[in-house]
Amino acid sequence: MSGSLTDRKFPITKTVRHRNKEHLKFVRTQPCLVCGRQPSDPHHLRFAGPRALGRKVSDKFTVPLCRVHHREVHRTTKELTWWQALGIAPLEVAHGLWQKTQSGGALQEPLEPSSAPRLQRSRPPVDADSAGFTRQKPQAG
Image 1 (cartoon, rainbow, N blue to C red):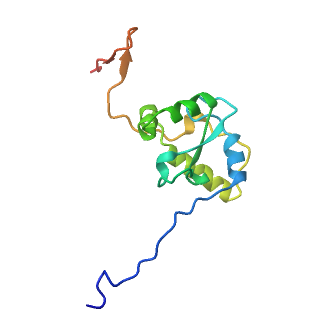
Image 2: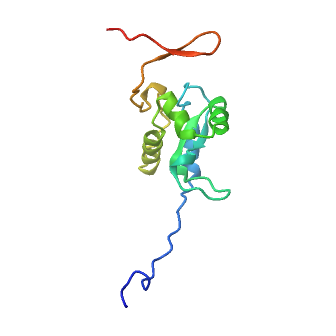
Image 3: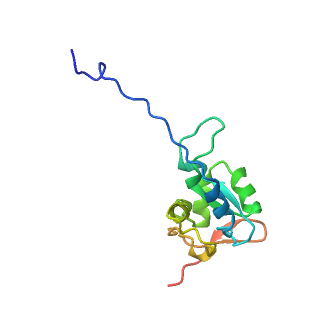
C-alpha cells in the first residue's frame, strides 16, 4: 500500500539552542526579577524547552536573578511552581528581553522589578504564623 504513513519518511528535527553572549551580558545588567537586587545572573528557564543531557535551553529563555534567588530556583524540583508562587510570568520577561537585544534596542536601562509581568492570583492571600503554619486571611466583604 503506497502512500501510507509507514511508507512516508519524516525528517528528524533537532532542537535549535540559540547562544548569544551579548544577550547574556544585557540580562546581567538587569535587576533581579524577584527583589530588584544587583548584580544579577542570567537564569535559563529549565521548563521553557525540551530536556537534553547536559544542555541548557536557548539563551532567549533567560531572566535576571540575584545570586540568592538563582540558588533558590535551582534547588527547587518544580521551577514553574516556584515562579507561580511568586506571581511572576518569566517567559514574558524573557521574551521581552530577547526582543530588545535582537532589535538592537538593548539599552542599558534597567528593567524595574515592579514592571515584570505578574500572574493573576486565584487564591486568597495566605498568612503565616510564628510556627510556620499557614492559614487563609479572612476575606473582607
